[in-house]
Image (cartoon, rainbow, N blue to C red; front, side, top):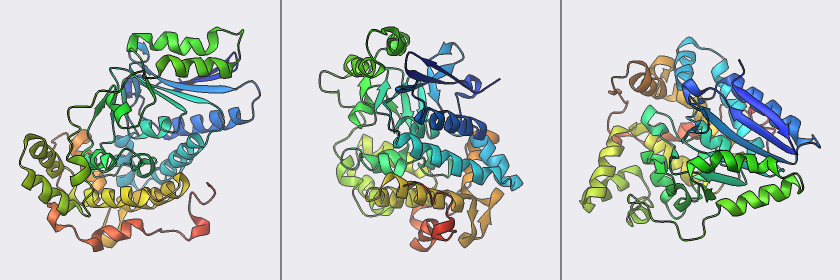
Length: 366
């Protein structure tokens, strides 16, 4: 059974992620299939507009995509499976294809959308959330970093909100995503099916016109309510130069928000907090293509951390996934164990490419 369903109706290419038992977590085959579909539709005159959604166990909508298949990452890294490297090259290539897609593109981000799901949706021209959207980039919790272009799209959130979201993995519920500039419109979850159908229903007008009408239907007419966690201190504290500076400022702030944020950061991988902050800061100055090339370098070093004498089972990422989804003891043995013990010599090599420029896996994207 295919893990994606596609059809072309009335000038609209429709994609449904169909791995509901795994919250549509992306397998390598799903990524390859999605790439083939979107590449074919680039030149297909029957396709004027594209749209993507996810199936849940109850049917269409209710779940978008929970990210990449992290259990596969764990097992492949331990086994030395070359499909792990192939996965990230294919995924980031797809992210770039979607971000630069020339045809109008709508993403129906109903339900869970994390990690790799954000990579599918953030390049869309119209990003629609509902009240049950649960959006996050929680990778530092598994010893990884917010990839799939996160260095690009998180760094472009208002102020220094991107650093906060990247380091903490804070979940955005519904309209929170609008406040973070990570969504363009909002609709009630029970309206999602009719909005989806509206893209193909009225054939008296063009697909482009139907897309434009959809944009109007979901646009937010009034100011978005400020999320309760969007503390005014974020722009001050998360603008500080280093993770240690951020930790110290949170300790000095001594209020409920600061205490909760500090506790959250203390649970994350100290090493990957430092790498992630550097990723966001660099990503703010990069094109999407250059950001993805940088992230491809970083993710290679996550599993082959040779400058620290770690790889496979001993890598930070495999340990993080073990603790969260394999053994589920929620007690990762981070190395170093403290944020204050991470040095620049540990962080900087993550940003060095293991490949010559002309042999980089993403050399051809621009």
